[in-house]
Structure formats: C-alpha cells, structure tokens
Length: 225
Length: 102
Image (cartoon, rainbow over all chains, first blue to last red; front, side, top):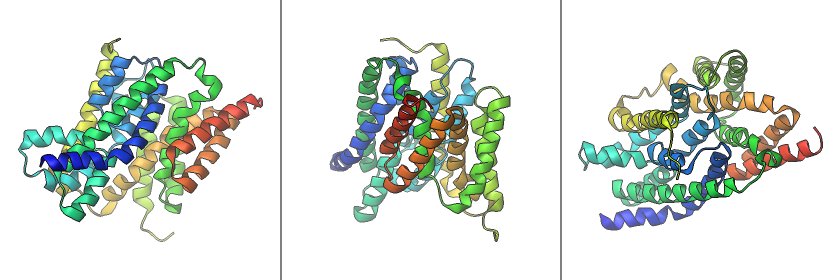
C-alpha cells in the first residue's frame, strides 16, 4: 500500500510541472488583486481546485455577495461529480471518514493518471492519494512563489495583466468547445451574460448565462438540425 | 503574514464547502446520475456554457484589443491545446494593441 502511494506521487511529477506553471500565473494574479498570502494559502487548502480558484479571484471585488461567488466557483466544478463517481469503487476499502478526506484531493490530473493506471495494474485509492499530494504540493509551491513575484511587478495593467483572467477563461472555454453544436448554446450564454452584466449586480451574469446556455444545449441537441 | 478578514473567510469557506460537496456527492450518488435525456445533456453542456458567460462581458469590455486577443486565444488553444501559451499570447496581444494606441 505504501509503495502505491509513492508510485502515484512519482507518476504525477510530469503533470505537476504543468500545475506549477499554471499556479505561478495564478499567484501573480492573486497578488495583483491585493489578496494576502494567508488568504491564498487558506483558499488553496479549502477549495483546492484551479478552475474554481481562478473564478473566485476573477470575481474578487468588494460588493459581490459571498454566496454568488461561491456558487459560480462551484458551478464550474460540477464535473468533479463525474470524476469522484468514477473512483467510488476504489474507495470502498475505506470507512466514510477515510473516504471523506481522500476525496478532497481528487483533481483532474491525478484522477486521469489513476484511471489509466487502474486499467493497467489495478492501482487504487493510494495511487490517487499520492498523485493528489504531489499536485497539491506543486499547487502550493507555485501559487506562493507567484504571489511573491506578483508583488514585485509594478503597474500590471501595462503588461495587459488585467486581461489575464479573461484570457485564461477564454482558453479554458475553448478546451470545453465540443464543436458546431455548441455555437447556439454559447451565443445564448453570451447574450444572457452580457445583458445580466449590464443590468444586474454582482455575479448573476455567470450563473444566469451558464444556465441559459446549458438549457439551450439540452433542449436543442439530438434533434435534426 | 496577513490573515484573511471576515469577508474573505466567508467567501472561501463557502466556496470550499460547495466544491467539496460536489466531490463528496459524486462518491455517494454517482450511480444515480441520469445517463441520458435532458438533464444529462444540460450537465454536459454546463461547464462550457459557464465559461462562455464568464468571458464575454470581459472580452466586450476590453474593446478591440480584447476581441482580437480572444481570436488569438481561440486559435492558439485549438492548435496547441496549451492553455498557458494561449494565455500569454492573449495578454501579449492586448498589451501590444494598447501600446499601438488601439
């Protein structure tokens, strides 16, 4: 069992380098928002999800209600439900307490590695945990280093850094693009978001736009076009 | 080391709780997931739709440089699959176009 833990951690080293790079950028942006390092560390520990944390910090400004921000951060992570559903059988050797803390360390990266290794050699929850610890270590190291770096950059807007959140969300959106069937749902999503952004306070535009696009996709797909 | 204030603590604790609830409920209710139909299609489409809603006001707000950068990011992500590279190209595009006075 011990061997599987370190095997999982070692297998996650290559993806963790990618995570570190991503984390560095995130740390710079966090510093740019004036968020302290203690708050960042708490967020890493409590949320531990790159996309959710990007969304949180992107909306980070006085006046946005806490539950709207939390809801927006959670909604981009609905996919975790599918990830942890798939690893549920691996967790069966553990009691509910053992499953409860282990599941917090499930990320896209160690999940994908574990699913692949599970098919090859039957690796399980310890392999997953090893990978999760490796990913968390690099996420912490990268974000904290990035935060220090960010404090040293004067006038970030000069480098277009104020556009960085929009840029990273655009890139993430493109990775979720599933082809022509997404055109209409995304247009609906964008239109609703633009209207809500103009007329409603806070983060309503994210939630309303997302739901409108999602329902459009559900209502139109599978029918002859 | 500065510690989070009450507002930050609330935002993060609430987010952590919700994200954790998703992770945990997958373990518990994973088998009960709808595998076909409206709700399955809605759930599959949700992440992309949320990101679309998230980015469009930002792109529009950034004017012409923002629009051009979004195009650059779309092409870069599709061609290379590298989110970080796309990020740097997009930010660089905005900086360059602003520098050019757009």
